[in-house]
Image (cartoon, rainbow, N blue to C red; front, top):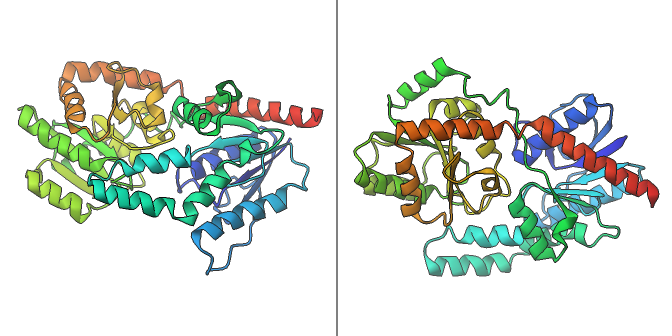
Length: 390
């Protein structure tokens, strides 16, 4: 079987969709598929794949023009080759299987605006967004699978995304197959790096406190401000010892002023970016991600596989696997610092924390990369058979 995958950069060290594409390609190669990768960059893994380097657009192209260039260049190079499967991740307009890792752009953009607290600034940002060519081009490319006839197989990476796609593109939900993200459950394990984890806690200035962990490069979209506000409320509520570690980037001036305003310098640490997230999962106790939009955050699965209960928002597709109060908590409104604080407070109870930690670990073992890839391969086989029938 011959398959084509397309994304700008194929790398295990890039974003979630990029690393997922590499992992999927590796599995397909091992199963004897002929794997073709279309993109601008490739870190030569898996080495058995065939890489088609797409011509980069001229430097003077705007971002919207670059998006169109990638989509049309990919179409021109793939539609005349006899592929059994052409998999699209949301940046292409030609495919017979569609799996969006970014969710629905229209809803993602709208929900991210909610992270802006000032109503006037939020309104101005919305006007700028709606007047941006990039916004409309991205939406047009994303809608390609729903214009094609016959329609590609549609795969949603969470129940939330299934509902979003059905609502925005007015299609029958039964046409959408849900396949949740998968992770390497051997790499992300609650028994890994215990000595290093203890050393990390000490280097951050913590001992036996309950440590809450936040991890993201995008502090605004992922709700860091409201988590810090929740930590402030929690300090006023309890005498129990706790700490908060925000991994991903140094604090912006706004975040730094917020920490200073609440006098939380002794409770909060900003260690910056990391290439070893599992070490932080092992060192901390609870993962908190009050995000304003995530199609299905991989980091939630990774944290749970390391035995961390998760507090995240209903705007995160990964919340669909969480049983509220049994292996984590789902926040209705990511800007509600009172609600975030209440769940953090419950997890300061060591006995309860131990119970939900076990629940989180047990749940995560149902979402391995192997299980995800097996389900995707079944979809690929169905798409290939339908193409042959047509």
